[in-house]
Image (cartoon, rainbow over all chains, first blue to last red; front, side, top):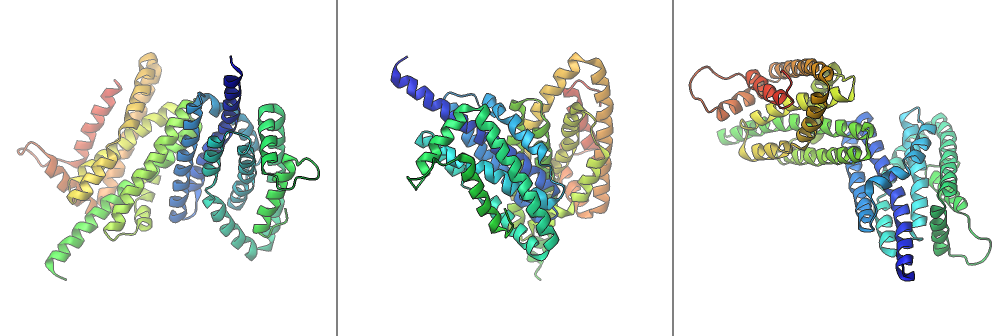
Length: 227
Length: 227
C-alpha cells in the first residue's frame, strides 16, 4: 500500500468515525421528535414536531450517503455509538414535559457542539456536510422560546429546571469523556478540530470538555438559568 | 349567495371532510412507523421504518396543503377524526410485534380502502391527490413479506394471527360504521364514490361495509390466513 493511499484510508476512517456519531445523533433526534410529536399538547406543536422528526431523517440520510461514498457501511456505522447514546438516554429520563424539552436543548446541545468541534478535524467535504447538517437550530429556538417564557412566569419551575440542567449536562459531559476513552480515533479528531478552531495561540492546550462546558453556560444563560 | 358558489362551497366542504380523514390517517401512520422504527429488531428495519415515517409526514402535508387551498384550516381538520382513530387504536392494542404488523396491514388497510372509495365521491383534483397519496403500498408489501414467511414456518402463530386479524377487522369496520353515522357528509361521499366505481349496473345497491369486507378477505388471503 502506497503512503498516499494509506493517508487517504486513514482520512476516510476519521471521517467515517465522526459521520457515524452524527448519524446516530440524528437518528436519535428523529425518534425523540417523533415521540414528542405524539405527546405534544396542541395539534400545531404535533405538526411542527413531526416535521422536525422527518427533517432529522433527511439529515441523517445525507450523513449516511457520505458514509457510503467513503466506502463505509451505513448499517454498521449506525450501530457503533448506539449503546453510548442509549445509556445516556436511560440515565437522563425526564419526569415532565419541561424536563424533556430542557434535556433536548442541553443534552443534544453538548453532543452537537462536540460534533461541530470535531468536524474541523476531518476532510473539508465531510466537515462542510456535518456543519451544514448540524446547522439547523430550529429546535434550539423553539426550546428557548418555550422554556424562557415558562421560567420567567414560574420561579419554582425555574429552580427545578436549573437543577435538572446541571444533571443533564453532567451526564452528557461524562458520556463525551467515556467516548474519548473508548474511541481513541474520536479523541484524536476532536483534539485536531479544537486546535484548528482556537483563536488564542498562547496559554495552555485547550481541553475538549472545557470548551463544551463553556458552550453549555452560554446556552443556559439564554434561559436565564444558572449553569 | 348564487347557486354556483353554493355548489362550490358544498363541494369544498365534501373534499375537506375526506381530506381531514386522510390527513389524520397519515399522521397516525407517521406516529406508528416512528414507534416501530424505535422498536424494530435490526438497524436495517429501523432505517426503513424511519423513512416510511418521514414519508407519511410528507404525504400528510400534501393533503393539508389541499385543505388550505380549499379554504380549510389544517389544525382544525386534523382534530376532527382524531378521537375516532384514537379509540380504534386503544381497542386494538397488539401484544406482540407480529400482532402490531398485522394490525397495520389490516386496520389501516380498511381505512385506506374506505378513503380510496370515498375519493370517487369528491372533486377530481382532490380525488387524484388522495389516490396518489394512498398509492404507496411499500408498507403493505413489507408486511405481507414478513408475515407470510413467519406464518408459513409457524402454524401456531398462523392461527393466533388469523384470530387477531378477525378482531382488528371487526373493530375497524365498526369504526367505519360509527363514522358514517356520526358524520353524515362522509356517508354521502362514500355512497357517491361507491356508485361511481361499481362496474355492475344491476342488482342491489352496494353497501360500503360489504365492499370493505371483500377487500379485507383479499388481503388476508395474501397471507394465506382465513379472513
